[in-house]
Length: 270
Image 1 (cartoon, rainbow, N blue to C red):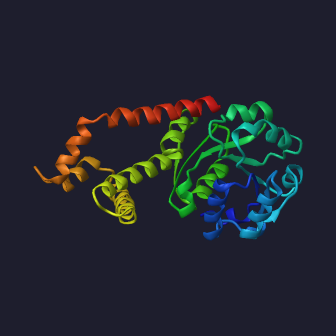
Image 2: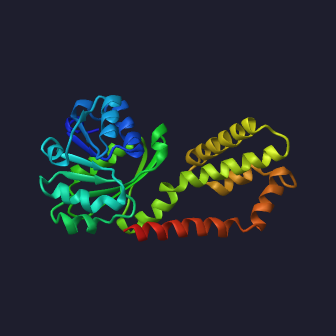
Image 3: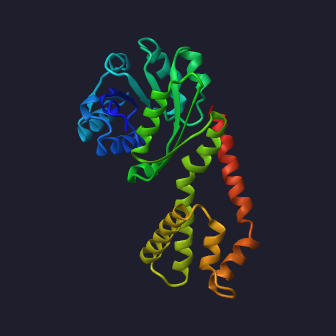
């Protein structure tokens, strides 16, 4: 890790759940010093609570924040980005802007602040438990130090990949929205077992831990999923019966449509 990273003065605009998740990892891993983090939210109570929780500096305006920081984490709702960028433009001092806004493309930022240094980040909510999956993208004119900072910044709450902006909408659908879909699948499997006599409390624990362990096995076995399936499937045994049900169902089409429709929505947001 670059020793100078923890000297960075970070300004956070938007103090919602995702910003909270990301900053929690940053502080816990001592990547940045809390006294070098400045937070602003249009909701005064949100920024006050955020500052109290982590020992950050609460700031009362975007303009004031820009006078104190060299890097910005933009974490507002996508529909207000135009208004927020207009505020940033008034006192923009060539800070790196790291944006976690779904669907808002780099050209949108540049159309309002034509000199802006933008890195887009697509995080996800498992960052709350230090198991996030993030992707970053940027234009060719972004310097390596800025890229390294954004990459390592997000690495504090999970795994990170570098990608290109044309892939971000699909990534939004897969890993950004994906936790909600896994939550639903885990819940539905538990409820199926509940119908067959298990308590929901036992069933949801069994389903959840099985999902967690299975995901870990994929990561630790070079993503060789077909081999992992074979390893747990005995010919003419229980798992084979379940595999056959899945193979003969429309689950492929359902998941294709889920990811496809979510991707389309991410495109529309831009």
